[in-house]
Structures are given as structure tokens and as C-alpha cells.
Length: 248
Ligand SMILES: [Zn+2]
Image (cartoon, rainbow, N blue to C red; front, side, top):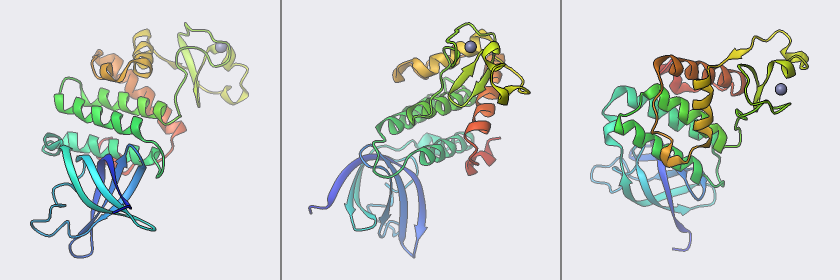
């Protein structure tokens, strides 16, 4: 069949359709976020029932119709079943999936977003890093991959690198003296970050993916990082993620 293509991806959501079907949203390397109908996936014994569950990663054979895709078959590479068995991890994974859905569209190259989600789930499974820290890493790195990255190495205006207290703007940081020249920041309070917290944020932005989930921070630095990401996302990504109701 000419119109059947194989894509590498992960199931983000799966919802029942009609009596026996499912509709899945896939984050794919080749075609971005697509939705596909899985006919008969809820019938017992259907080959599609096991591969239309959230977080299933693998190759999906999809038929491209005029307005939507149909899932024909899949070969599962990884299922992340251990995450589904843990309530907290399930909540975090749901949020990570929802954020990926938010930044990805159909017909884009989503290889970076897919790889990040995959290694983030692996990190959750390994249990070596607190979930709160994994969340900060994922949020910041996903914003960077999706083109909303932050300049956190130097003041956006003057390039000064050793700012003790910083003001933040869409795109990055300003030092105190540059912030004074921005009327919109006149009444803003500076955001004070410790050196360790700023270094951690810079590490998250610049380290290769294979090292992304290999560090730990003190409890106080973790609180700073969490506070920073909340403040930043609250201001510059004012979207209400449904899955956050279970986390915050
Ligand atoms: Zn400056």
C-alpha cells in the first residue's frame, strides 16, 4: 500500500471512540504530533490493543487518509509499564506528555522533542533524581528545543555574566543596571538566584542529552529552580496545563 508509512513515535494520549475503537495522539519523529484512529483496538484480542496505550514507544505503521491517519500495526520498542504502576510518576508523565503536545504540531520534525521525552521517562524509571528536578530539567530543555530558549549565561542587553540578582524577560535575563533602562521593569522585583542555581540552569541548557539527567542539587537549590521555572512559565507560557492539577 502506497499510502502506508512507518513512523517512530510515542503514544501521548489514547481515548475510546465508538464501540470498539480508539483514537491516539502520537508524537512522531517524522511527522510531528498526529492523531490516528485504531479501528477495533478495544476488541479483545486485537493486535492494536497493546500498542495504543499512553507512553508506548515504537514504530507505528499508519495509513494516511485524506484528513486523518489510521493505525494499521505497530512494533513496540518500550512500554514504560513501571511508570504506569506508580501514581506520582504517572502524573508527571501525563504533564510531560501534555507539554509535548502543546509545543508540537503536525508536519514538523519532532525528533528533539521525542528524544527528550523518551530520556525523561527513562530518568524517571531509574529513580536516581527527584521528580521535581526532572520536571525543571524537562521544562527548561523543552522550551529550548521548541525555540523558546532562554539566554541565561549573560545579560541580554550588555552581556555581563556575573549578575548576582537578575530581572527576567521573555528570552532571558537582564542585569540590575540594564533593567533600570526598561520602563516596564520599573516596579519589578529582581529575581535573586544563587550561583549554584544559575549554574544548574546553565548546565541544563548546554549539556549533551546523555548527561542531562546525571546531576543532583541540594534541597535549597532545588527549591530555587522550581521557583524560577514556575515564575518564568507563569509569565511567559500562560497556558493552563490540565495535568498540573495533579501536581501543584
Ligand atoms: Zn546588563
